[in-house]
Amino acid sequence: MDHLKNPRLNKGLAFTLEERQALGIHGLQPAAQRTQDEQVANCKAVLESYNQPINKYVYLTELKDRNEKLFFKLVSENIEEMLPIVYTPTVGLACLKFGIMYRRPHGLFVTIHDKGHIYDILQNWHEPDIHAVVFTDGERILGLGDLGAYGMGIPIGKLALYTALAGFKPHHCLPICLDVGTDNKQLLEDRHYVGLRHTRVRGEIYDEFIDEFMTAIVKRYGQDTLIQFEDFGTANAARLLKRYRNKYCTFNDDIQGTAAVSLAGVLASNRITKKKVSDHKILFYGAGTAAIGIADLLTEFMVREGISREEARQRIYMMDINGIISTGRNDLFGHQTYYAKDHSPEKDLLKIINEIKPSFLIGASTQGGAFTPPILKAMASYNDRPLIFALSNPTIKTECTPQDAYEHTEGRCIYCSGSPFPDVIYNNKVYKPGQGNNSYIFPGVALGVVLAQVHHIPDEYFIIAAEVISENVLEDELAMGSLFPGLNHIRDCSVKIATRIMDYAYKNNVATLYPEPKDKIKFIKSNLYNYNYIPSLTGRWSWPDESNEKKETC
Ligand code: NAI
Image 1 (tube, rainbow, N blue to C red):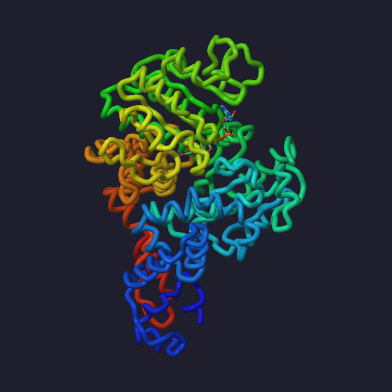
Image 2: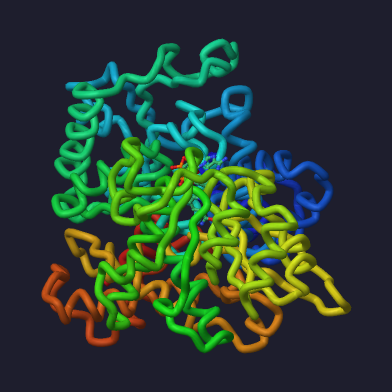
């Protein structure tokens, strides 16, 4: 029965007659036999029959619980259609409904009351060989705010993408939600809420808890386990990254992944405008985790282009909910101070644009519709090809839609969004706006890092990833307004990013996997998860996936 009940072994109607007889499952299924491709087509037909994205999400979750290889083949070979369901925007809705939809654990919940016993809880996870952990404390889920334990949907979704987009083996991945409470009153009163029913624990106890968590992961799974921070609140994200980045193999996708995908977008736009990054005057609308991460990486890149760090920072202006980031303010935190200008307090975005005349406007504010027609028109009046990045997620939080962006800039803007949008027709021209999706970056970076067995993740890896992505945008794609390669090419891009990161890691003596693989692409490909079925009868006592893995793993 394991072969029908265990999602890792189950092939459903794809079991051959010989397999059904030898495994003792003959008669437990209808007579029909299907190939895996036919099953994928069947799944797509089922998905099409659902109108609501959330129902598609539930169907895919159940498919993953039933037949893992079929799920990953479906997602990996249909990335463009599946990404918006498995990840943003639908995953946001799934998080909001996490309590009512909860069926079974797909990861670990570690609560603040488990402090002192985190290692023991890790021992309860059934897979012993974990290479990548994605974890959140649920404080800033997408642009939806504090969702507490409901945030678990995000690490689950991200790690599904580790497999679908970079070939990580699913059993090497572990999603974790750290439940320290929530400050979301609505959730605390929601009878479906599945997390701790008290406000967030902060301060020293919280810090000790995170410290213990990081130590426990390394003790349980090894120093080179990749630990990805996901959707932490603004007050913690940059602070924790700084604290751990040189001690653990860790990164924060909201800071570094977002920064890299934005840099990739700018580098691709430079192919159209023939500008350098340092030729831009940049205005950020929103100065939180994502914006600061982007600003820092753009600064690093400008320094590489040859200007000083101080000059680079002078080219970057920022606004947050309290107005322009200026030296006179006493509420600035972290790296915001790097970008503070000597400026009188001002909260009006249009006035600031008219004064600064930026060439590049980036929204990471969670304020849907903030880039109004007058703002877009102003950008178009100062620039031949204004850059407009509206990065806030999910879709309703986008600062402006591509339709608005093209319409109010006479089709001249170079646009990207954080959430996916359909094609736009403006002035008889079809635009296919690209999605500044971190999924272009983090799977490939993670793959290179884990395979080279490095112990830390420097910014350089994210610059490498951004360069690879921008180089892989086709001229045709650029002409249609997309700054990113087609989503269906992400798997290839991940291998290219991983290859370049491995090259860099060996050149800089930080890789610990020895001997160095001679042919890195071949090595990487030989380590990727195989989502195609393999024969279930490989010998009486052998475990199918294990024999497969021995062949695949160097
Ligand atoms: P955050 O909460 O750290 O920062 C939000 C910033 O927006 C704060 O500086 C806040 O003061 C500012 N803000 C809020 N209301 C404002 C207003 N009315 N006017 C001006 N500024 C205002 O959030 P984080 O992590 O920086 O994320 C921001 C948005 O970016 C979210 O919607 C998130 O989903 C999105 N994001 C998109 C990514 C992508 O597309 N690749 C990746 C990471 C985040």
